[in-house]
Image 1 (cartoon, one colour):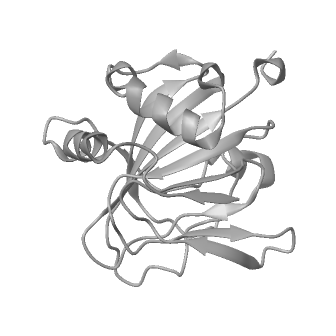
Image 2 (spheres, helix red, strand yellow):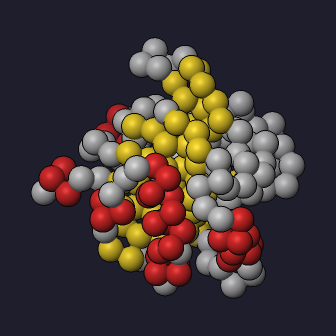
Length: 185
């Protein structure tokens, strides 16, 4: 895991923040920030806590899913360059919006974003107090990163991790998943 501050110029940081907080930006409701119903069907685990959030999927399986993917291509190039990753391997681009939640747990459900080898660049759009937690194979917390505007954390996408809800205001992140095309065939 590597933390990189100021992965893009401040003017671009501000532009990304303004875009995500504009009333015309389209957010979709998720009943849970990280839990996938498909996992419930496979594992039968039905009693995981649910922490609602909002999401915007801009790119998936290398294909734009909204016009936002093209609008932020320069931002993604900056993040790719700072992380030392091939921008042509950008497989998924997803924004997450987390709001304060009464009696929220320390962190949301532990997960990996995809089951195939990948690298994540988790970019923080704004300063917030909802940390990202990282776990070992025994599911013990081994690290945590506090969101700071312009900061990115780069990590192996098969690392178990979890977001958390902020205690005040909001938390916006941009999750960039990089996959070598050899793993998607």
